[in-house]
Image 1: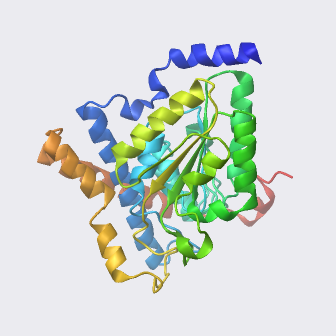
Image 2: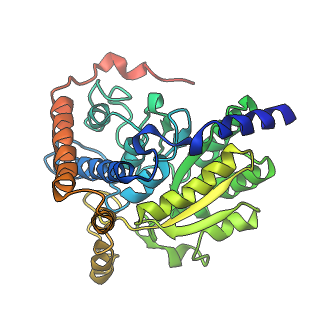
Length: 342
């Protein structure tokens, strides 16, 4: 075990922060790349919403519009070989980790060109070649899975980390607390990322727990934690930077709680009557893309044309993905039993 720890430290030292190529450094180009990735996620989900309204996409659909800064801030510091796990609202996580938008769109549309040949749909995305291992419709269902990936990474001594995204509702599940305990006990290189958007489906946080900040749970188990503004991509990235360094250096688990808000309902078609209009209006003013654009303008990091291009390029790319998906064939009935493992 000692040799494995030494291997991790040496490996981590040779990889400056483990940053993904799309967002290396904090120079102007690196910062603008963060904005561009957030725009791809936003454009993707808005297009998905339109296709859902047109019945081109069916089934339950959970959008994370308004939460893009968490996905991008976290994944911008990861490598392809770092394992990421999501939940039922994970289109943005997959895209931020490098998933191909053509294949992702095709999966949501139920076509054979999708990642799971159209059989996984919105809540069960897999983009293995990008390091997005899986998502799940079970609340908190992938939290224990991330421990397995972290355990394997530690044993291999390769300096890899595992990251799992989940919402505040998962904080009340048994496997969540069991996972925090094991991650702490075994000093696993796993990073827990809680997207605290204030609601577990339709239930406000105050109605399902008396713990206002879920990062307090991490402290109970001796896990370093941070609570940050989840609509500030640089704040998320700064907290993630510390967590990644600790995990790669063999210092064990970390917990990041990101305070954010979903601007859409729990699912598409959700009437949203459980939310106050004033609350929604207040969070719209904190839109992560608009906020970061203002930051970049103050820093003179790019021109007005660059900002416009970031959005237009994203929307063009997503339109191409939609055309690809809707022109792809449906899976054949005999494929029902393929890609199934027991």
